[in-house]
Length: 117
Length: 117
Image (tube, rainbow over all chains, first blue to last red; front, side):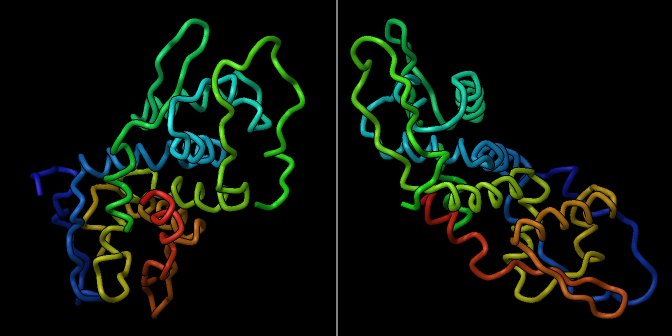
């Protein structure tokens, strides 16, 4: 594990005997925790989770116009959710004419899935 | 999938041809999405994710006093994080004397892990 100030134990010790056996340090270092937490936070909303579900199942790329009827939210709300997913590195889009086509980035969820599994 | 007003397609249709093939509906219904999003949101913070990592690796139950030196946050911040994890159904605790002992609830992460995997 990389040396990380945030994981360095404090020197403070409470008086008396330890109340339980010493715990192990996290296997997940701070950098990896930040990466996975960002992904988890992005899917920590039911609409965004369902959007990812649709995009993962869909073989191709999906334009916002086709996503919109699936969810009872405004187009601006949906765009806001898609931006959060893009900022977290879960989805990306490409523009063709008027439309932005969204897709889930390969491996975007793998690290979190492996840790959870 | 359960009937869910929030997943009912809107009747609004844009003029002209569809811009891409129709997408599939989410396999994940609203109720399941809410459950999994709550779990994801709770681990959507690097400290909380590392706390879960420690608790999962630890065979027994861990008291807050032993967790605290692992993270450079105050006890009240750590307690706040533990409360969020408990509210999301990921951890629970039992009190023995002065100390609260925390542990990860069995199966708490399984649904999200299965969906991600």
